[in-house]
Structures are given as C-alpha cells and as structure tokens.
Length: 115
Length: 112
Image (cartoon, rainbow over all chains, first blue to last red):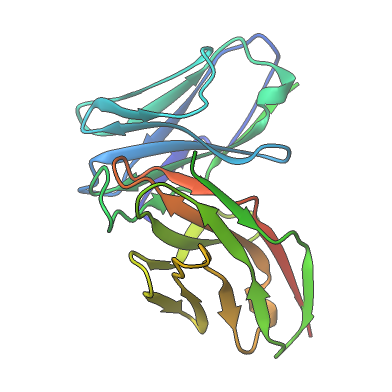
C-alpha cells in the first residue's frame, strides 16, 4: 500500500458527460501529480500541484482541469468526455515538488470507460 | 525535449533466466532515473532509482546503473522468477518539478 488513495476505482460514463476523480496523497506529501495511461499514448504526465498551487503542466486537454485543496487532496475534472478519454488515471504524491531525490508514490488508479 | 526509450516487449523468459531490459534517455541537465513496476491490475511501484552518474540502484535482485556516457539505465536481474511477471517502466524526473517522463513500458512474462 503506497498510502495514496484514489476514488473511484472504476467509472463508466457516457460521451459528453463530466466526471471528477479524487486523490488523497500520502500523509505529509505536498505535491500531487496526475498521469493518464492509455494503450496508444502510454503513461503521460498531465499536471502537478504543490501545496495548493499549480507547479507544472503537461499535455492536459483544455476540457480537463485539476485543483488541490487546503487539506492537500486533489481532484481531476474531465468534461465533455469523448471515447478517446477512456484510460487509467493515476495520481502520485511526493514530499517535495522537485529536486534530485523526489520520489513519487502512486495510487491504484481510476479506470475510466467512456461509452 | 526530455524523452525515454525502452526496448519493446513482450519479453518471455524461463524461470531463473537472466533479464536485461534496455532503457536510454534524452535529457537536458541531470535528471534522476527510475524503474517502476506495474503488476496486473495494480498501480506503479518504485523498483529502484539512481540520482547521479555511475550510481547503481538495486532492489529485490534487480539492478540498474546510471550511465551518463551512453545515456542509459538498463535493468538487469540475474535469475528471474514467475512472480517478476509484470510491466516495467523506465522514467526520468524533471529536476525542477519532479514530474516523471516514462518510457513505453516493457511487459515481462516469466514461465515456470
């Protein structure tokens, strides 16, 4: 158990809908990262928050957004869903937001299926 | 930009065989390098890491050495077990943010 909790584990929704994925980082970790894992794109970095502020942005679509709350949990919002958004979404957390010894711990992921 | 390239899978080995999974990277600066493992239906677990040139990361019989001259971080294990069957990801981290850039993953299947 990595200590990173993601909910829900599975989500099935229709095209055009909006969903929210939730992540609780390990106790004491200030940084949260979101990744998307799909068959054709592999593991892609989406976005990072550090202590409530956006720190880095990857190939995140405009239809997607995220935030980190004062209690450090994070939510990833996906809207106007398309079939191609079906993927495994991982959250990871680390104590620091960079540096040579940054070690990220991953949650079990949320499997999103858009039908 | 930064990138990671891994050997393609799937790799199928017999138990007790020697394993090598090749990984090369392109990066500006001096990133840290990682191997993560993903067992079926699970999230990613850190297997080992190295933070500077010539460092050797090791864990559970797996080893990888950070080779700056060849920009490589190949994963090796002397004798694989059926329980090592999983997908292995090589990754580098951005020193400023800590975000990870992953290779495409290599599926390993070990037969008894």
